Length: 419
Image 1 (cartoon, rainbow, N blue to C red):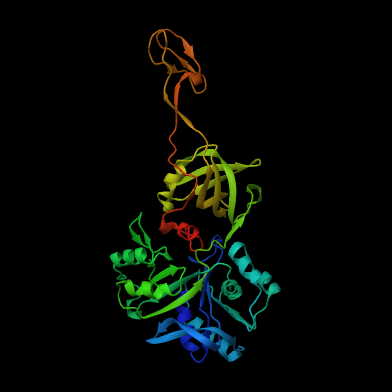
Image 2 (cartoon, helix red, strand yellow):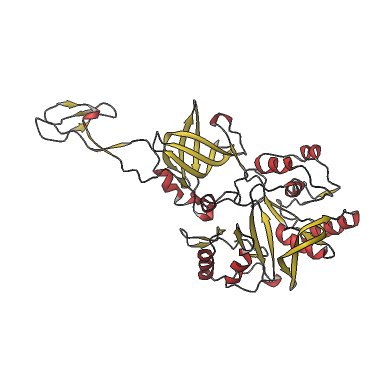
């Protein structure tokens, strides 16, 4: 199913209440092995709105308003059971990865929970030591309780927005109708949006490939721009839409760490010198090594990153890099999300073997590191007697990222870093 669609149904169910702010779409640690595909959770603050309000969506032809300020309404057991009924009705329990959880708080839980859940591994037992909700219910193994609590606890330091549009129910599972040219036009007109279209792979990013209710999602830095961007798209009929506040594209999952402090399932920013030249392995993945203070770790650029691997292939021993990525346990490697080339090492390449001064013939290699020998007269030469030229390094000291299709939800695109 779809957690964000569930949010629209909860808003319908609790229409007697006002919404304070925006519904929140929060992505959590992308490295946990049991995560769902997007590892997302949603929270909504219901209450009594005060003062100014804004349109944050449309459901059943009715505008949905979010108040800038308001007072939360104490939750009741009756409200909780209503919410649980919606969750139970829409959840696809037959899917092994569907483990929903729902929590209700009257006061915001500790921000610590969010930062642990986006950067680390959290257990349900550890969760309740920090904070206990007024009401909670987990289904199946109940792991959804962790995400639900973390989404409620999130206090944005950086933020983005996503406008998600949904399909008419009878079209779920059928091919989506979205005009590609209109997506490109929208992307070029509204610079504050991001991750709309992959120009390398010529592929729309705004539409999911799964048979879920989502028609498209537009992400951006400006909340007011997103409805205008939606209006520019040529698509099948939009059944409903909702504008979420989100941590997507913020790099909230990244923690600065030295190579010696790397731990599996974490996402890190670390610096090292290339210690092993890049090599392509089975599956089209690219591996190279970096080292720092006696520690050496492999870094992997996986096949879906496409042309990002071409950047990796240009690295040479001695280059100094800052790497952002997730740490895998097996094989122990950094799954590279971004690279900053801090400095490039001089690198010389051999262009020809030495020429025998007596015979004017090119010498032949005796063996790796053993020098050269003239096949005619037997005269020898050293390795350094070959002709070398400085390699032209088609790299700059700057940031590089994968093709747009391969970016993680939480990864900050270079477009945001440069604005």
